[in-house]
Image 1: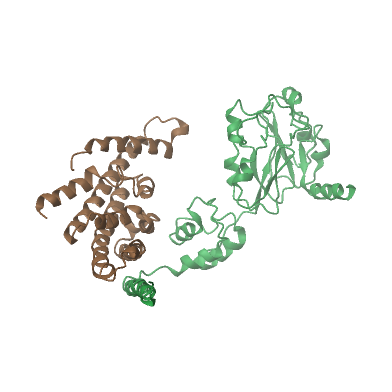
Image 2: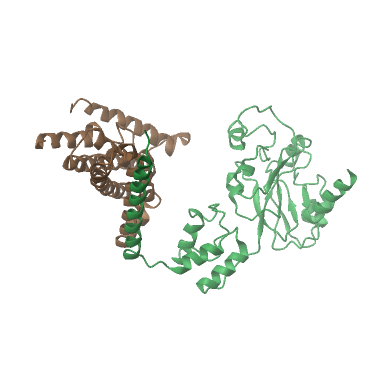
Length: 279
Length: 194
């Protein structure tokens, strides 16, 4: 028969043990207390706390410790950006030097309608796996494979797959650069957010070749280079590059490009809204 | 009880029934802290300290508290309490006395709390009805075996850094394969102590 004693005794014993050990630990924590730099906690509070690891330290705690130790600059957190850099700079007594915010841009527009597939890929749904199989199913060797390795790695859900192409939502993108290293094709580039005109192609093939497999690739025709009033575009390895320091978003090149490989993000928003209205 | 029996316990703890290589307890730190020989050794020392202390304290808890009150069924939870407290205590002491060691052990120090090798040794002490001295010796011998295995393994992994390993096998895959081979090697000690 179970008596009240059978319940009370175990509770008392375990509770007593817990209390005793708790008291020992409380005494030890006071006795062995380590003077911790209060700035570590302050900086930790100023960081976003996403623990994304983009700074190269194990989580935000690791970065906070590194900043206090002087091993990392106050602006080491790309995610927190200027806001947290200013706060941390205040705590550390340093002026933060911060470049402007950069966002990730996927340099490919060759979706299922515009780019040709050289074979049908049925393997693991991962860009790096597909890339290992003859560079992926896309005829273009520099194109987005569309399995979303970048989508999976993005801690902020800023990337979506649209018709086989990864598209970055610049409002959600924090510039942590995790996707840049996740892309096996290396076609994600960090572009200053104020620069609204981007050449969305990474193909280094000759123009003639590009034409055979993609309708929206850069064919190295040199038109944008000649038309740019700022001389901000150069042709290198069969691919046009914008020198962002010179570009003033005039978007002169956008309409001139015969393959529409240059995207104007100023207009992107308006076009999206148009689509919504038309629906 | 004699010196021979203690000797058997020591040989058994270090070689024959090695916690990592034949009982497969405490694998988490074995894989996690075995990249460098120095940190592996420090981890071994920390585990040795905790295991030795835990063996003594759980012995006292078992025979002074649980058995007289007929509460043997509380063994596991009471022992977990003891180990958790000990680990916290060790962590505080190490943080105070050796910040370098504290940083080297990192997350794996609090992880000794959930290291099943520690709980394992205390429960086995009770199962084999060891007395206080034997429990302490078994705890320390078991932890020394742990240290031996983890240091050997760390040395192997250090060498492997320079080996031409296929891309897909680098890191944990090759570590697990070598751990398995090491375990096979330790199988050679089976039967040394009855």
